[in-house]
Image 1 (tube, rainbow, N blue to C red):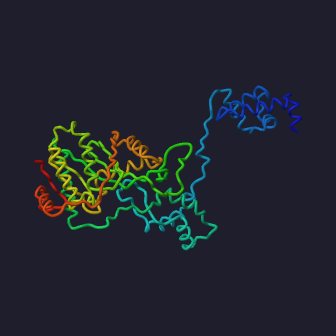
Image 2: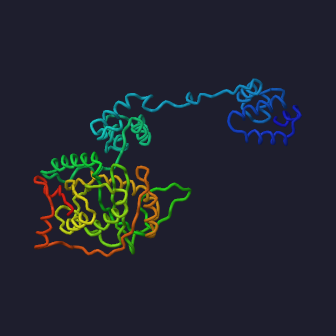
Image 3: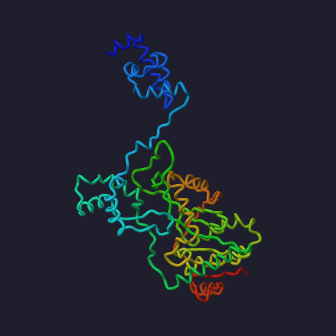
Length: 406
């Protein structure tokens, strides 16, 4: 039948094949226009014959002929082709799902989103619908129920570490003191506030850290994290108001001396730019290396005050509330930045840290290749002499300490 059509219209098989291939190469609405052009040129505009000869849809060819003649392109409303969502077709199903979910859902704690959170999976909802009397053949699949839950604003999320383990009787007073001291420091041109902390040890090697990096091929890491031959201890100084940051990495233990030496490196870097500075307010957590009980750290801060000529004020966050320290948000950003890469060498760690920007400013990085001993402390008469140089708050003696330079 097709051979007779080809002979009747005087078109060879080779021409049919060529035209079909060329039309198939044209994307979008241009393909319809090409079909119309070919039909007008070879078949006198007969769209039904074009269906027999080329195998094209006659309606599409007819539209293409009109587009070719007028130069006007028809735009399809693809939204009309969409099937209505399951919950739209079956409002009772949606009502029952919401009735199941609402008692088990909660809003996002900071109210920054309208999403609702629940521990119930789509499979649990499916089983609950069966218990409510729904027949198996009347229910959509578990996957469809999952899509319905997503469209209705329900999400599964991991458990967030937001519940504080302990709250001491002084917690509220400590926070009030921090807010007051920090506000005064930020408003005083002769005072600078910084935030100091150390971070978890970095294992140097071809290890995965669970991060992501953009690329055509995934970064390949070792399948087992074993035999950590090299480690680095990160420490940091953050100026919260400006966002200027300073990182120091140690190759040994995380101690009071390590933190104090890192602070000294920061001061050597910044002292010329801070020549008019009189007071330095330092926000710290209650870590074992720098707490108000750690005599070696306090001894090193006294030495730093005498060396720099600054009045040093140590302001601590309450126990188990270190996440409120400004530098903790900086650490989160740094980890997100470098977790998608292989920190296979010390230079790789330092270079990744140098390339990290916080509030538009690049981080300054230094390496402290010094051996630090654990358990160093001040005792006896030296401790008594040290306490004489400390001005502890009358109400928060362990949380607010001032050291005057002599």
